[in-house]
Image (cartoon, rainbow, N blue to C red; front, top):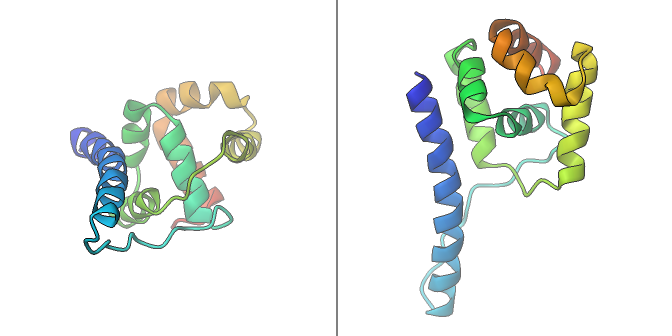
Length: 131
């Protein structure tokens, strides 16, 4: 399961990079440009949860994913593909809010998630209403 999630996350990053290059190249050659999926607003809870997952080290995110129901994993992974560009300030605000709810420092979030993935996954799911 972890390998699948890590592969998916890497695939999303590659798809975004290659997709942007392909779109620019097609447009410059007059070829049809395919529309990308609609972008989520960072105000949506699932988008905020996706930012948390993308901000953690891949192995930690994978361990959190393994603690969630398949429907929740699907929601979050789809949200990851539809995230808009996230400014560092927005990312930090999202991480600060989640860390504050947990009662830990934001710089200790990845450590806490690595030590107690079930607890953090449950909190993440409940905080962002992913159930």
